Image: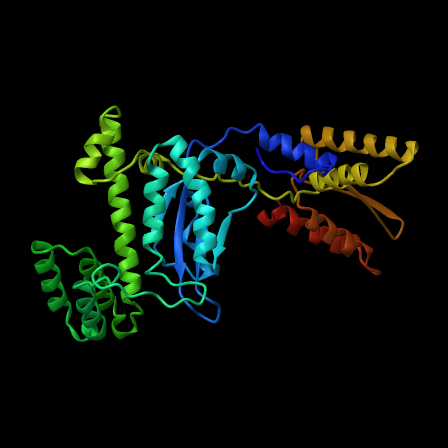
Length: 378
């Protein structure tokens, strides 16, 4: 249950919102991702994202982690899911001290061990293994030979060379390199970079291409994630009962939590129906009268007259009756009849012309003919 400060009295609106959210079904699973943020003008730190499966890359942009990849993940336990059920926005924690992070994760690992025996201890062991690699809290990283030093990828120098000199190649040369890589090692990062170069040279961008090894590696990671997710969904659709065992043949170490995450489909936002704006005179008048009834405190006489006016306008609109406009000029009165769908602005412009001193019925008649013959009037 969510923690509420002892003695705190909720207001009526807070209690209603609490009861509304509390009645909603809980999520079956969740994921926590751990990201390392190196030293900038702020000290290095580790970000911990709760319900990481609903975070988008753009949500991590304010922390400078748009292209970052998590170095560790774990499933959320039931108490965490219950606690964060009441979140009304995305939640994350940040740590600048390994001791505080490990102490907090020990409590969660104990709960994980109760739900899935051994999972919490295994996660905690992996987390402590990264302590030597990622230094936070002002402590320099400890160098342990052969354990924490990761060798530079063989692909990275090739990526750097292609980024530096790729704009000097011709389209034919890049196409040959792309065919050679597809028939050979099929390194994903190299293929992505060659495709970007081929596209830039074909479209004439050339040396203006702004790309870095980090962006290429990020695209390769997203492509691998997409490939795995599509494979998992295909296998599960064909054989749900033994899907996990079949998936583990291709992806060793695949867990049930990862399966539920890959099968989850984000709900698409419903598109709002487009409503045409109200422009004709009668409906504009109806909207103004309805607003007057809701916003103003009318006396009984004004209230009844407003309601009667609305009924008359609505009946005229339903029966598509023409709009009569009586104009008196030089003691001569004429009635001008407008189409029932005539725009409010058109009728108002006609009235403004009639109110100008010196206007005659002949001028109004010419203006009336123009209005009747124009398609813009409706």
